[in-house]
Image 1 (cartoon, rainbow, N blue to C red):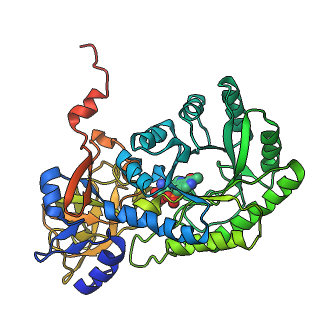
Image 2 (image 1 turned 135 degrees about the vertical axis):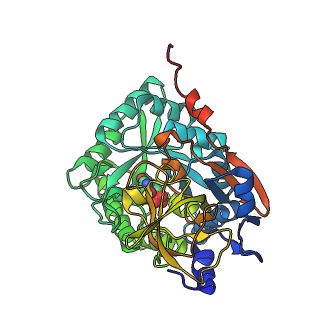
Image 3 (image 1 turned 90 degrees about the vertical axis):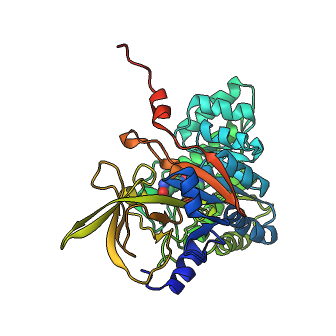
Length: 446
Ligand code: LLP
């Protein structure tokens, strides 16, 4: 853990907090040109702050190297990481498309001005009405996840007298070293058509014969928060081998190829993932080495690595309970309902006391959430300066899979989100109030 202010700057403020975050002359954490004390005073806590400059920079971290290495490509922002029309509009203006997994996410894309043809519809059990909706709005591609789903897409397309543009999701059998719950490329997965069982080949054959399906290509996704480059190169080779076989056997013309997303990011100072440039170069070189002609369009699907760093969770410190000889619990006003990741995956985070960023005297504490569950611990055994009620705790790398997975457990409203940019602040999602929550129910007959 951090021991001095200089190191704090270099590791946390330099790599994990949004670009341009700094400690101002009064020791207050400033994000996007706005002191977080002001943000919490004006918008309350918990508060999720997103920095526009960082979102744009992360988009460009992918689009720039692709422009030179693989121009016929499209970066799809995986909206499951954080679905918000404002974010959709920012990534659309950076030339990205969107990976969606529900009609809700497709609507978010459309509300953000994302062109439907730049959206791809994923999911292992898309509903019939969602497939209908996707086709009605002119979605770019539907990724079929099973033979059964391929038939459903064909039926819906037929009834609409439409041709559905379809990509098949293949399970490549590649082991990505990440948490079990977020690993998807291995054979025992609910996602995709396994190569080994013959399901992938059967799907190609069926899709090539189907009158209302235009099979445009193949997709694979090996997992999330992946730190290794080799599994991506392996995936490219496995899928391109398969594509070649399918070309010879069934005349498949591979127009789209996607090795998915999952590129890992930094949550703490010990994390050292490859950067976007290295992921992109590994994938594009692996394709280049195969001399595929014509070269397919490359689709990649980063979610977390586009949005996580731009987001910071701000909480107020409340009750502090010292159990002598055991541990000190510092409770905050949020927790597992806005960030399920520590409880679900054992995810580890960093933190600073944002109203007085300094780290000269440290003590080991455990930061607990407010929810009625012993497992609601956000930071276990973290070294932080002594805290008092009312301090603001800032957790960086909070932009992905926090608000997107948030719940109303204990019937607590979800936090507000704001977007900061060069000194300006915009509320992108108002805080849910108790009244909002009650409006979600029918009134009982009294
Ligand atoms: N493409 C597909 C087909 C996916 O299933 C996913 C993530 C992505 C792209 C984007 O992956 P990313 O670049 O964001 O890693 N809730 C978990 C992560 C679940 C990922 C689900 N699929 C977490 O909080 O770590």
